[in-house]
Amino acid sequence: MSEVAFEPFYERWADRLGLGVVGKLLLSVAAALVFFLPYYARVGTTALHNWSWLLALLIAGAPIFLFFATATLRQLFPLWEEHCEEPGLATFLVPLNRVLSDRNFVLAGLGFGLANTAMGALFGVSEPDPVAALLLFAGFFIAGFICGLPAWGIFGVVTTFRKFTRAAELKLDYTAPDRCGGLSFFGAALVKFSVVTLAEGGLIATYILMASWTRESNPWVQLVMWGWIVFPFLLSLLVLLVPALDLNRMLRRYRQDMERELKSKCAVLRRRIEENSGAADLERLHSEYGYLCSRREEVHGMRNWPFSLGATTTFAGAFVSNLVIAVELGKTLFGA
Image (cartoon, rainbow, N blue to C red; front, side, top):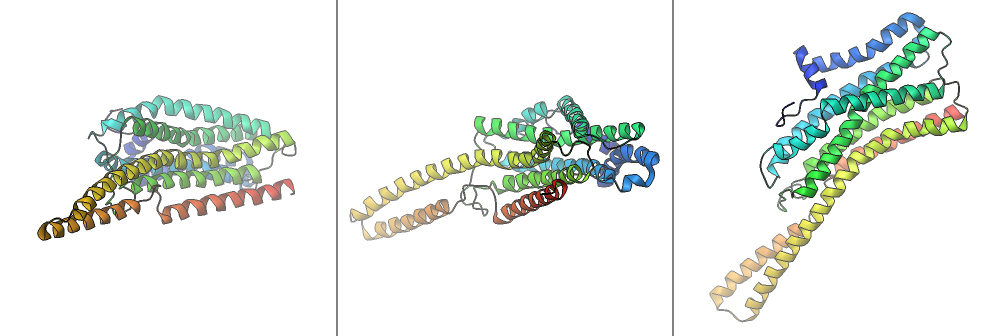
């Protein structure tokens, strides 16, 4: 993988089809059919009534969301470069590629695949046919593997971003129309990452809570089950808040520095005005003082968080709706 480009293996596989977005959709659907077609051939229409179709849907949804998140990340690169003190994509692409290497993606996928398979065994598959049960476990592994890729992607984005913001300062501009130093594009991207994670988490929660499990009445199994349900919600908060906290720190410090600088300049001008300068000079000083005051108002009006009202509302709506759905499904399942 080039250190000045970001093209994980799943992107390269999709590009080989030469169909653009259609190719990525076909690849996503194919991943689901690898599980669902053999399972349907084995159990027939039972697959349409035991929620295994939803397992296939979340398998197809995970790579679609992953491709969307990757495209969103790529769109950040030119904007990110503009705000770097040292120009050059390598400033952040080198560490990004190190964390989000093909090897690390595959290892994360295998880890999540095995963990998801273990969860299926712990919950207890209510499938009397051993072949059909084996196919279900294969579906659990595929779902875990594919969902593990965006989960690792979130970790990679968060850790890389934190290392970068701590090692280098971004160029900020208090006159930017977004009233956020020009960094609102980061906030919009973080919200997209978070919302697609919530969407996949909603599918996972629905499948876990609606499918039939032989040990679902065991309180310890229920505890693990809810932990596995909550995990995507925690990831959505992680990718949203951790980078935002770093940006908040940078924005607050920038505002404080600019406010201190402008306040000092205003104090100097006020002293010069009060010293009864000549009429012509006094008019110029008043003009400069008014200009500096307007700049102070712009700095004072800056937001400390890189989220617009629309982005915040989008995330809050997605988070609350998914949480309500999960809770209501849980009440139905556990008879609360």
